[in-house]
Length: 66
Image (cartoon, rainbow, N blue to C red; front, side, top):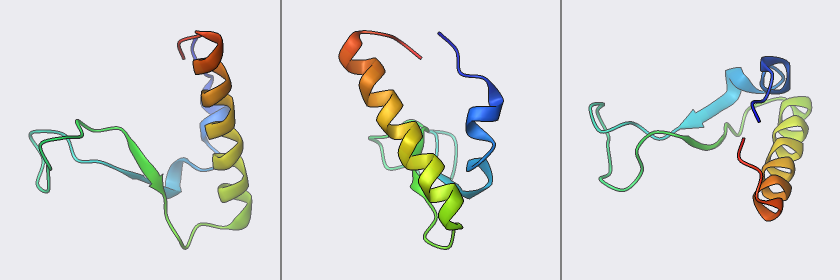
């Protein structure tokens, strides 16, 4: 299953991501991916991100890959 972009667009501009192995700040553990949402993000973005995280967890429990 693939998520449509409109699910992400509510908070995409406020995401903090881990650097990949070819980027400055790489920690040797995380290879890119979502780290979290910026503290200064608007409440609407934080709420949408929290909902997104809950949906990811639910999918993971159900064995659905997103």
